[in-house]
Picture 1 (cartoon, one colour):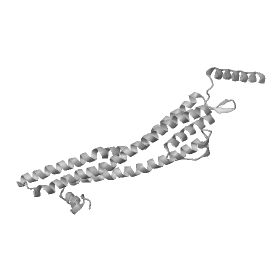
Picture 2: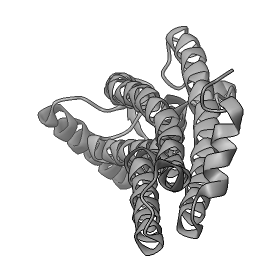
Picture 3: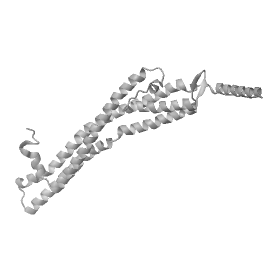
Picture 4: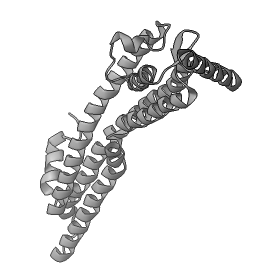
Length: 258
């Protein structure tokens, strides 16, 4: 049998703990409940994000047009990189519809218009990073605070025990043991709260860091892809020459109509 529960030691210690100790244990149990709620929800979120990210990259790499996947209507909800792509593709498609330029028979946008796409990417990346990190403060608090809350209960319990012994003028082991056991259980529970949270926190932070790096790399990749395909990259002199030529053509047409 586990020594923690041998001969009812665990329940004996809880029974002998002081009111302050029981309050401390109650706080620790509440922290543990919140911590495990975050662990389970974040584990599901990160597992889905990892799986959907792989699926998205597989589908995106199979396309030749950066907007092809967005126009196909296929979605990868839960993948942070997909949210980046969907937001940027929607903005780019809007600009191609509302404010296009005609270059060599193809619709493109100007560099200044493309800056809005970059802003959308940055804003979405920030929102997705916050979404991935949401709730992690609870785990870090459980890791850092759990043992200290337990230690508070233990010290308080030991103080109460020695105070009682002093008042009773009895310093035997039999008189001290129940109070000390009741005090130590708070530290035990504090460690039981902190240890799972610590392992979960370290694993999840590593996973979140990997997903964040994938977002950073994909941002550079999608900006390059959009810019090569849908942004007017002609030299300024060439753009001015075409604008002047277009202006003269319109003036000539207006003069002819007169």
